[in-house]
Length: 175
Image 1 (cartoon, rainbow, N blue to C red):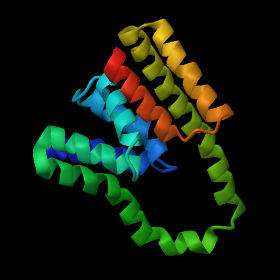
Image 2: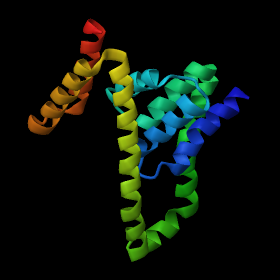
Image 3: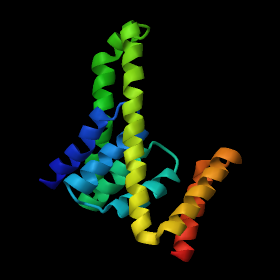
Image 4: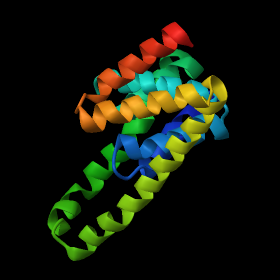
């Protein structure tokens, strides 16, 4: 039964996560934290930070790690397959149709309507992480990390991987 749960936990976000890995992160978090309760929000946030510091697609890294933690090597394989299967199926079945209608105004409008939904899902995820960090390490440390991260990314154009690595080091030494 656990392998079926692993499959569902990553197949559903793969289907509904229009926009790629970042769009599916809140959906994976919902399945892993709220639905199946394999992790806490804080554990998921730490895993997400670590996974973002590694190269490659975020959805497959999450699926592989969580699948392995829950179901061993077979769980990792099932998680990876489940996260890739929706895209694979759609590419095989609908690839030709998409190429044929990619310049359609309706398809372009659909994309415009989906983008705000993805932004809201990512905003809710960020808000949940803020609340969890606020409870875990306190307001001031959370605020300092957020302000410094924003400054370095937006004003100094530092790559986010360096910010994540710095936050991991800060948390490892001081928290």
